[in-house]
Image 1 (cartoon, rainbow, N blue to C red):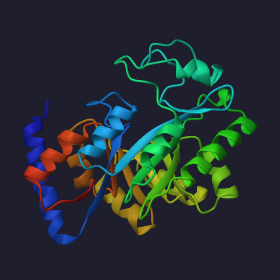
Image 2 (image 1 turned 60 degrees about the vertical axis):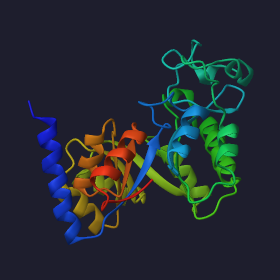
Image 3 (image 1 turned 45 degrees about the vertical axis):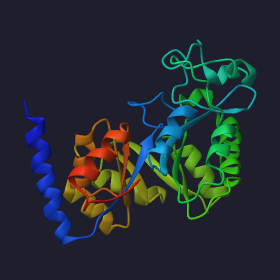
Length: 275
């Protein structure tokens, strides 16, 4: 078994060497508000990440049977809430009555938009959760994506980047067609490779969210040469974040935003991380 302390030291030294060769800026963002430190996708999580100094966030959007948007990762309610069943088959009033396992209110999309309204220098990834696909036939998918787009565009903010992400290309294709100004990121549950670089070029989406496992510095460099922005996941530990930095990523999610910021600030103050 690899000694994690040794691995961290080796990676840190590699990053230090790389820092002399080129300037690297990493956009860090709090994944679901910091799901391993906080109650994921709740107002408490996003507020506490903001209070830590984070302006980068990621969240997940789903739509109820009557067309109202809520912030939930899973289509089923059991893992994170006191409810049962599938959110897409429930009404908004039913979902409004739910709480998380930790007692926080299930957050609506509208409430999260209001939270971001008036804040500047934001980076927010809005993941369009349109899976399983049978819950989102094309007409329903388009309704959902359009509502997310319009809601996000209503947020009053300066010097911010709002990114629409999905592992389901259908929603991103809709945005490409109807809102070509939208910033898009295609989530791929695989490492960066010649194949995934080709997918970016074929779809015309030049920002990829790939897994770190199996991704190499050579792959990231190749992607950069093709004009592709690289976002890596998962970010379940400080070690994951440092590995992402070593690999040369442009963006990196973290489930432990407080731990990452403290560790990087104390140990790698020269590393240019935008939180």
